[in-house]
Amino acid sequence: MDYSREMLCRLWLQNADAASWNAVKRLLCNYGSAEKVWDAFSPEMRKELSEKGYQQLLSFRNAGRDKQLMDLDRVGAQVIFDSMPVFSERLRNIPDAPDILFVRGKLPPEDCPAVAIVGSRHDTRYGREQATRIARELAQMGVVIVSGLARGIDTAAHEGALQGGGKTVAVLGNGIKGIYPPENRDLAERILQTGGAIISEFAPDSEPLPFHFPIRNRLISGLSDALLLIEARHRSGTASTVNHALNQGREVFALPGNVGAPGSELPLQLLKEGAMLCTEGMDIALHMGWKKVQPQQVLKQVTLFDEAAEGQEDSILRSLRLEEKTFEELLEETHLNASELGGRLTLLEIEGKVQRVGGRAYRKA
Image (cartoon, rainbow, N blue to C red):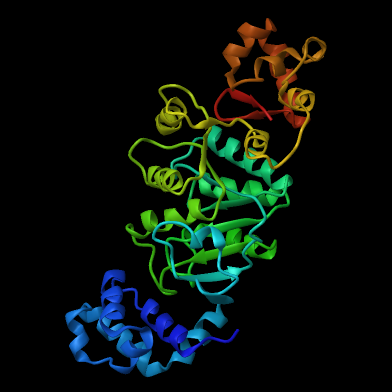
C-alpha cells in the first residue's frame, strides 16, 4: 500500500503514546500539517509535549519514517487512514471518529450486519453461556460479532462467533503489537485465522492502560449496527459502551437476568428505559430486518417444549430444564429414592445430557 509523506508523518505522531492526543492536535493546529511538524521538529516542541513524548518522537524520527511500516509489517498489521476507501464508513460517521486505525486481519464489508456484544469481566456462568449462544446464533446468520477481547463476556462473545462459523472483530485497549489479556492470545489467533480482525487506534507499543478502555469502547459500538448488553453493574466500563451506542444512534438490546444479581443491574435498568429485550439471536435479526421469518416459524423456534415432549422427557431433565439443582432438590422433585436417582444421574452424565457443576449440584447439558 502506498502512503503519502503526510500519512507517514501523521503515523510518526501517532506512534508516540507518551504524547497526548491533545498535544498532537495542538501541534497540527499550530503548524498546519504533520509534514510541517516533522520538518520543524525541535526542542522547542517540549512546550507542547511531555519530555517522554518529545523523546519518543525524536527517537522515531531518527529511525526514519519507513521503519514504522517495517515494524507493523513484522506483526502482520497495516495502518488505515480515514481518507482511505477501506476505512470503516460506520466509524467515519461517529462523533470523535478516529483518523488512524491499526489493523491485523481483514475488516468485514460495510454491507455485512454487525452486532457488538459486551458485558462484565466478572461474568457468571449464566452470562457467559448466553453470550456464547446468542453470538453463535447471530454468526450462523452471517452477522459479524464485535467485542473487546477482554475477560468474561467479551471472550464468550468471540468464542460464540467462532463456534457459529462466523467472523468476529476484536477492538483492543492497547497497541496492535500486543494481546491483552495474555490468556486470549490463542483466541486472537483463531479470530485472524477465520477471517476476522483485531484493531486498535493506540500507538502500536501502547500498554493496556486503564484510561484506554473507555476510549476504545466508542469503536466497539461504532463498528456495529446494534449493541447487546449481557451483564454489567451500574458503575462499570461497560456502561460507557452503552452510552456511546446511544449517542451514535445504535439500537440497544439487553439480556434479562435474575433480579437482585449484581450483573443484572444495568441490563434491567436499560430494559425499563426502553431497550429491546433479547433472549436469542433471532430477536435482534428480526428487529433489525436482517432475516425474514414467518411468525409461525419464530413461534416454533422459541417454543421450549410442548405437552407431548414434556410427557416423554425424563423427570430429571424436566427438573433441570430451567436451572441447576442440588441432589436433595432432585430427590424432592422427582420422587426417586437416593440410590435410583444416583444411578440415573450417572447414566445421564455418561450420555452427556447432565453435567455436575460442583459438589452435589447438577445442570442440564
